Image (cartoon, rainbow, N blue to C red; front, side, top):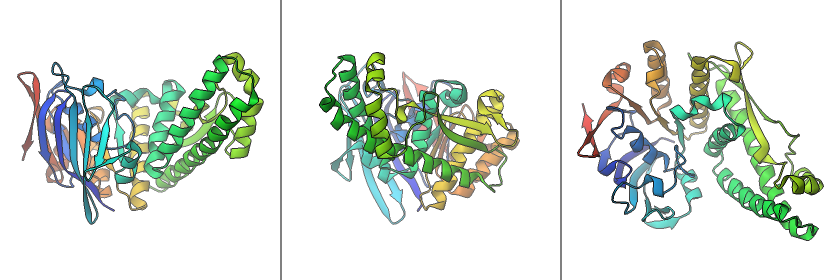
Length: 366
């Protein structure tokens, strides 16, 4: 199933007072000086999927200053045989309101509408940062395969917050914990199974792929203890760990304690020990594998690649562009100048973003 944006409109979003872009299904090369608003443009696209977008910003942080009157994003999303209208808005920093085809919808519904994958410079430290970042990276990939993963994660987090409150208040009555642990066990087991299934799909997508980007062997681990992947096992582990958790003031077992371990497959070297360039190449490889796996399932995703070309030589850039075009993905890519997209030629459309009188201006180029 092909997937692309036909239009993107912004109102008072970040540096964009007004912006309206019409594009076709080809890759979109976005260039302009630093600070002009290129990343803001693709951040708006990232909000067409569940969650807080590629910057994990609050609704208030995304409103244009100094007006601070709220913002709105509109898009026409083209899927094979259908076009759907999406509207996302926030008024004066309030929570986001989503509408699909003019009807209110929960954020999780966006996961069933469009698969959106991204790679941004802040992810370059993925392999050496805290486990939370790697879990978030894995969950974004998992969500692309299983849209219901978002709802399971929300259910788990909500129940865990309530359980942690009981733990901090030193509540000892087992009845208070039982219902929460049952919810955590059901949703937590679903989270673990979905994560493992996502890793299996990524491994299959990497096997035999002809690419200039190195493959990564991935494993779901935990530094604390083995995390049960069955509902009964997780419920029992939570019940057994109550007194230990009470001493810590938080839940110490569950999918929120998982970690993603990666190895540069060809060298057998942990990703955390690889060079900066190798770590970047592994990230690109995983994003491409994710897209390849989705395309094989008939769900070609939209790709958002922020400043990715700046870290690649001409040969690697050409290889990346060739793979994107072969996938048939509408990739939104940013860079400081048009020379970074020379290898794409007529296979892409180009947008120039500049800054004028304190606001971003977007213009389509030939």
